[in-house]
Image (cartoon, rainbow, N blue to C red):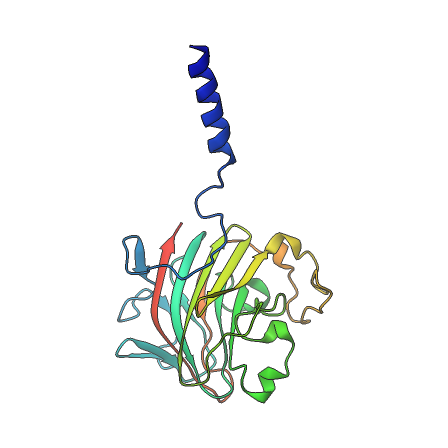
Length: 230
């Protein structure tokens, strides 16, 4: 009996030491064709909030003619989002998560930046403004975005205040929002853009998922948007 009790105690302690499902950082692209994954948007965009004259779908490819954001009607908490995007020359776009204000979303959400880092403007921008960065806060650990005209594969995992990003097979972001307590300076000493007035640590960790449209003169295209709730 004593041995059995000891075994049960050890099992309890071991289980308690195992991280909860979904807490580990994303290190590779998942197989979004498996059960549990759903399309972020239906083919007719009936579950999206958007301006119909701006966003269009053609053969499964989603794009916009203006700088307007398309939002999921559903609010997401912990999730994994898998998608592909294609840049034009000079693209500036983003995937927006934890969006609680769809009008004034910039200071009230987290943006995973999409940008054409081969374009001079973005190549010379701060590193935390470049592709796959948590915009204005943390730069991607490496530049792996493909050249304009090629499709990129991005996966974003958000669990509570933990966000990780894999781009084209490489983990490029692993961030704890709770460490970003200032609206002026990031933990690495870089400046937070003045329009990001809410520290990441103060943002809710739930909200709508959005895609930024055509920002400036450069288009962006999206396809194969799949999401899994954790």
